[in-house]
Every structure is written in C-alpha cells, then in structure tokens.
Image (cartoon, rainbow, N blue to C red; front, side):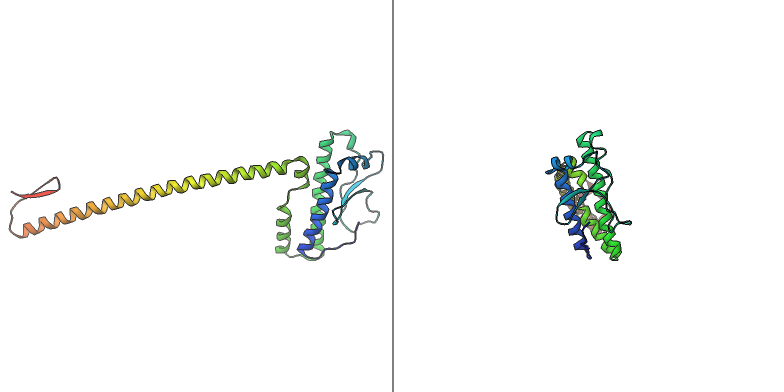
Length: 212
C-alpha cells in the first residue's frame, strides 16, 4: 500500500475520492481487464484503489497488522460461480466498506474531533456509493430526487394559490362583518336619540326605523 497519510478533513476526502475513482474505473470502464486479473486459480486477491485514481488487483499486505485496513480477501474465488453483474455488485459493496474504513482510520489516527468526523462523513455521503454507480441505481436515485423536487415545487405553488384565495375570502368576510356592525351601531344610536327626544314607541323593520 502507498505511504501517503492525509492529515486534514479535506486531504482525507481527496484521498477517498481518488481511491473511489480508481475502483469505479476497475468495475466499469476497465471491467474486462479487471475480470481477467481476478483469476480464481490464484491465491486470495484484493482490489485496491489509490489516491492517484489508479486501481490494482494484488495479494494482501504481508505485514501483520497492516499499515492500513485491508480490502476484502478472495474476490477472485467467486468470479466464476456467480453472474458477472452480481459478482461486480458484491465487489462494489466490499469496496465501499473498505473506503469508509480507510477514511475513518485516518480520522482516528490523526485525532479528528466529532465535528471533523461528522463533516467528513457528510462530504463522503454526498457522493454516490460504488455500488450505486456499478448497478446504475445512482442515476435512478437522481431521477427520483428530480421528480420529488418538481412535485414538491408544483405542490408548493398550488398551496400558495390556495392560501392566497383563503386570505382574500377572510379579508372580504371581515370587511362585510365590520360594515354590518357599523350599520347596526348607527341604527341603535339613532333609536336611542329618538327615545331620548320623547318618542314613546319606535318600530324597526328591515333595518330601518319609523315613528308610530
């Protein structure tokens, strides 16, 4: 394995992206070469990704414990016993797990605080996993997000129009109520005035008044 040791969140993330890009290349554009190198007749083989965006199929490190976490052993043994797509998906899942273990190994080694680890995780989590890229589910998720976003936008506009109509109705109702209140307050005032002026009986019909 390479001796490169990133020490900051940004450096660890660059290291992660480089290794990830190399492994994606092995499982997609270079898949023919990768398939040939994973000979089931050979010993336990691993898929390595490097910060330089290169990949390599090789034996695990001889030193124990290794300098860095090791990827899954023996990926070559299952090659001919599975459908190619299923085998590549399995290698992709183990590759995702290895990338996370390497990134957080650096985080632990160089004493990242909680906020640093959280920031690193969020940066990593914004990228599709290797499994999602290899199986094509990353594109599907992107389309689903766009559909949900468009639906939410249309729903928001519709709700906004509905709320606007309701506000107009409430304002109109309030104005009508205030107008009726003013009318009857004025009517009662006039009745009281006439009573104070000596009229014995007042008749009110349909919102009007007349002397009897």
